[in-house]
Image (cartoon, rainbow, N blue to C red):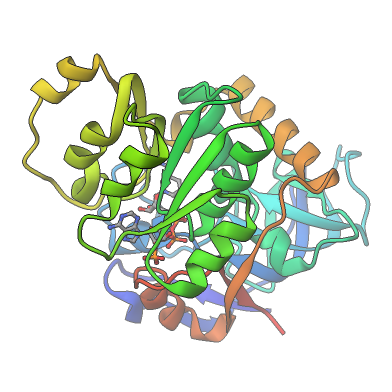
Length: 326
Ligand SMILES: NC(=O)c1ccc[n+]([C@@H]2O[C@H](COP(=O)([O-])OP(=O)(O)OC[C@H]3O[C@@H](n4cnc5c(N)ncnc54)[C@H](OP(=O)(O)O)[C@@H]3O)[C@@H](O)[C@H]2O)c1
């Protein structure tokens, strides 16, 4: 079978498409024939060798997310059947051989039925983005119906799902995007207001939207750029959950006092077993009842994974970037 192998950490050029031995499922494991693979920004940080949460042993095949058909079962697995359509959400589970491949072996707990209405591409968009969105909104921010929430970076993998989930929970959603295509997707996902984070002063409109009170919750994808302004946009007692940040910033701590604000980070890597199970149950329900409707953006062949790693860090996001195996 063919897949991506990384033999040294570095730029996207270290992603090599090559023939690899088919991985064999051991006890408690499932082998999935991957049809689509979810590309997450974290895949690029891991590939660089400088990711705080995880450094794989070289050589390795990247990827935690994907969707396909169950191909073989290891001993003791009775939760899925061969031939079943599934999505894979393997971050936090042991023994993942890497989803950037035609065949991936993962822990049976990482494999979940893919509703018939969803494509493999949509299934590949579920894992890290949906679980992160749910964790940020409900396990961290504890969002309530009627609250106003700013999804700061709503056009990407995490943001679109956060918008769908927050809207379904009865919150009033303000989402941001950096392109008109992204803005359309955010609106379609349920945001009542869409702002363009590339326009100077774009957060000024929040005063009018919130009658001068500010938003109760901010889910932040780019804290190194936005955190200072987030505190200005926040209501008293508001909560900011930092999902993404790619640098540092000058910050005025006094703003937290003025709003008696809570700023907390989240990382899927820190979810407890129970939290991960709760999030997965909620996400599976959301897929079944149509609340979560993954949006596939760019589709790139697996052999061009290097191009995907460049693309996933560029602006102009329009849903989930996936790799296709055929
Ligand atoms: N903490 C965790 O557990 C966790 C899990 C998953 C992801 N993340 C991180 O969260 C971030 C988003 O992940 P993703 O998968 O959604 O990535 P993505 O699909 O690449 O989307 C990136 C999003 O950030 C937006 N953005 C760009 N510039 C922005 C700005 N100045 N202000 C606000 N938003 C801006 C993009 O909008 P436009 O392209 O429309 O400009 C897009 O909506 C990444 O940094 C990722 O590493 C963290």
